[in-house]
Image (cartoon, rainbow, N blue to C red; front, side):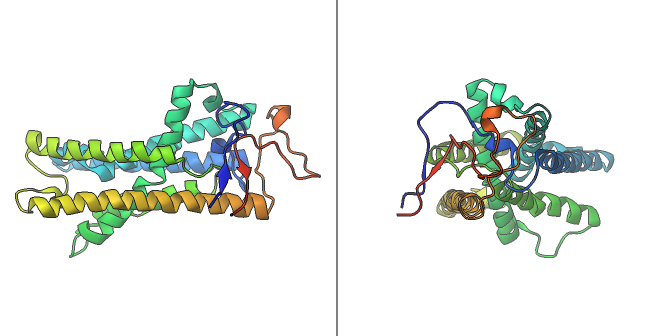
Length: 280
């Protein structure tokens, strides 16, 4: 199945500014949504830390940084913050800050995007499948904080799958996705050694056999691969439907360079980053 062929005509990163534009939202609206989501995520995180600090639970606040759930939520907050800044700069000047960054940071942003559209779905699935308290949450605060971090996080990720003009996830990004999961696994066991607790009970080698723990680890890895594939082809479907079938080639800044201006009568735009070949 041949779906996309990347252009080799130039080495420019994101030449048509797919990371900062949407097929349906104008840049100003995309900036606003991303900024609001970033503010909400940061507010949630700092409020949770403050709540624990004012309720004699400083230990829980410190230990929160050992949880993959919390770390990925910080990732969402920072991603949306940077994405909002890049989008705002594109909206106001026609050239996003991302286009002016060194190539290494541009690639890092691309990988960052991949993580925020993959990890939240894994977190949500695992939490509600095996980690949610059987008797429910004991307070309104617990209900809100867990809903924000274990349900709304998937909504945040879904927004980035559906609304921007981003391309399907590159296959090469599977490598950092797996490496980061392995690094977190190391952190989880380092936490046990240094602080005396396991962030997640299914990693506990004292109450679970090594075979069972290994099965959980392999299961998370398989889940990551499956989610990566699903997200990759959902993005492919979105681009195919919106651009190939509906002709919605994107909402652009009025200040963009002339070489990227859309010919509204013909409905065409230079799309250096991607070329459709259909399905074989």
